[in-house]
Image (cartoon, rainbow, N blue to C red; front, side, top):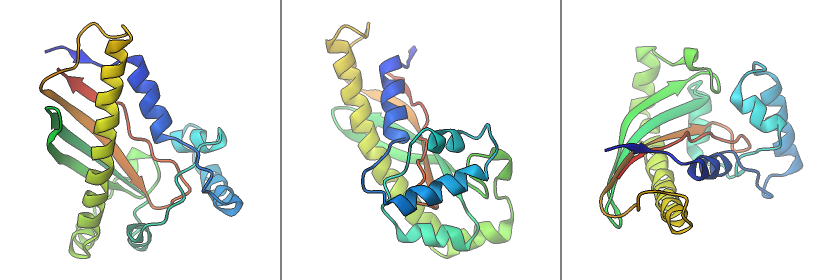
Length: 186
């Protein structure tokens, strides 16, 4: 099967991934700006914040646990199967990073990784990722169907659809997370 990624889905996921919320207080936005200024000029998180994108400003307990263990970002790759509903959604890979969107800071220290596992943080993060990814799959499928109905797709997305999603979590609620461009087969 051919891989289909359409521009509208790309735009949808960028806007759904780096988005600004009115829930953010001015002090949240200022904290995000200060954090972003410390990043390299080419860092995509810095670019997003400098261009007015912020997180949802909803604090989760796992964010505090990430900070305690020095984890700034969690990146996950997920596989899914859709057949008029989610039939399968699983995390294929999960990685932990000590700096935002700087992939050379992947945490490899076995002691820290064991602490992430033993503290229950990894399980909490996996649950949060699966919940958010499930919502994104629904939006993705609806977008594909909408694009077909408007004549923007050659092939109708129906029946069994498989794919791969990329989902990130960050340790600060004011920072926007990038969820990558999905790969979809149908």
